[in-house]
Amino acid sequence: MRDIIYLFGPNLDRLGTRDPAVYGSATLADLEAGCIDAAARHGLSAEVLQSNREADLVDAVHAAVARNRAIVINPGALTHYSYSLADALAIFSGPKIEVHLSNVFAREPWRQVSVVAPVVNGTIVGLGKIGFMVATEAVAALLKASD
Image (cartoon, rainbow, N blue to C red):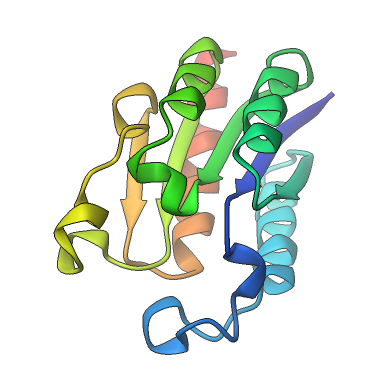
């Protein structure tokens, strides 16, 4: 069993080359390494999954019910319309944090709607890769409070 699973949605495999002015220059590999290191600093184990497929992310959340204590997720564009992902996240009883690299509230109106926000503990936006470190801090505190 791993403590945290970090889930990255569609197009996040293009980080570092996809619109760096919006998403920064960090690659997915950079984010993955940072997340695993941040978890380790709290004595937590971690795993990472990126998929461009909604079904893969839903399956990962379902598997996390038995395999993980917490979820940190950047659903990418699925944030705005994936009720199946929101439903899957609602089933997971551990801490869940939604993270977005850019400040979605300073962008197009459609990006300002999250269908997963109502089923997670919190949402972090606009901090770039630091947002994942903040999410890890939050998860560590939430797990400690529940132990």
